[in-house]
Image (cartoon, helix red, strand yellow):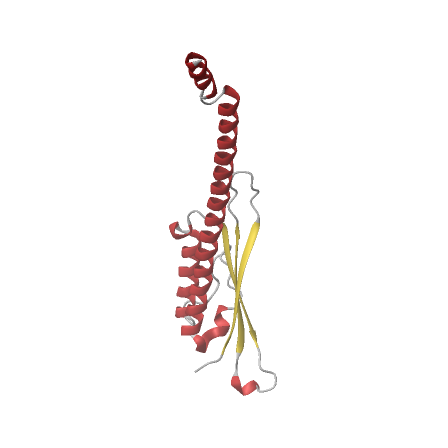
Length: 168
């Protein structure tokens, strides 16, 4: 009787079966696959956020340049970094320098990693109720081709900053 009890005990404590081990492996594989997909999605969003931060800083840079030369705000109208600056360097040296520097910034090594950058500035006089204020609306637009990661198509993206500038 003692021998039969010992044999029964050995049979009931046999450990994992092959099916249980395979099932555990499948569950683990699904978990690892989900984690890798989540990591890939997170990396893509991180690249998008990095691009948006850099481009927003480029737009803010030009807006600050215009604010610091607010007396000559109309000289900035029509700036387009896809063509050469047409601002008269004798009459408006600061605006011309700002245009040249901003164009170099958007096309140079500072913009590496962000494809197809193009900056534009539009200045329109405002204040029809009080023309003596001589205020102008300034719109700085930066467009670029968003990063095309794994499974993504490059798309046009745009940042637009707007402000009203009045001479001192």
